[in-house]
Length: 84
Image (tube, rainbow, N blue to C red; front, side):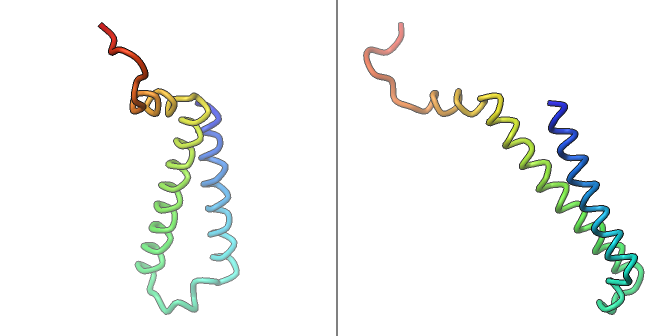
């Protein structure tokens, strides 16, 4: 489970670095937004990206630990007589 946290932190750090680079080259000035609009835009992008990274990390973790297999097997019809 430690790798999920590391994966999430690396992804979020790279997204933050990309936003900082765009901010440094004055990339948000062409949007005609005031300071509150830019802050809302950046926070929205960070939250959405964090949600996507977190959900994908959970999918990978679930697949790696074979948690989905039990749910898949529970939904399959049983061959033979029912258990007593």
